[in-house]
Image 1: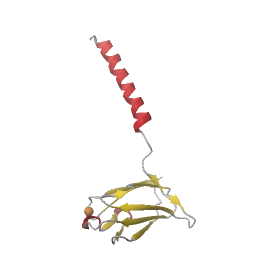
Image 2 (image 1 turned 90 degrees about the horizontal axis):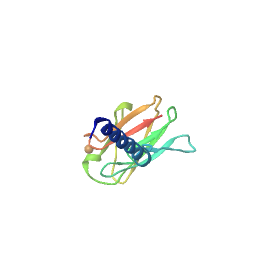
Image 3 (image 1 turned 120 degrees about the vertical axis):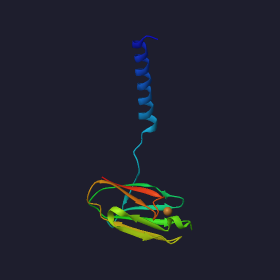
Image 4 (image 1 turned 180 degrees about the vertical axis):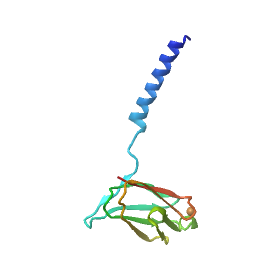
Length: 125
Ligand SMILES: [Cu+2]
């Protein structure tokens, strides 16, 4: 195949890939926390084999309350740690444990179990 034809073919394939990605694969990441009447941005996070949801989106400058509910007994998820906010909490099985944060800078902040196996992210916009 001559070089110019090859380039046109490759260009066409690239355009198709871009279109497929844009329409079918691209979606906004994460779950937005709900603003409650108390002024908190709240989200419930299920802890079972990981965090569900594992990406939570909040707005900066408003207090955030993340309610962790652990529904397993595996030692791995015993604690949740927010290193950037210097916060951690024990998560007894079957209890809902709130973690309150005040994110004042936009960015992405990781949270994880004590061994760093389960991971999630808090996106501050
Ligand atoms: Cu762990």
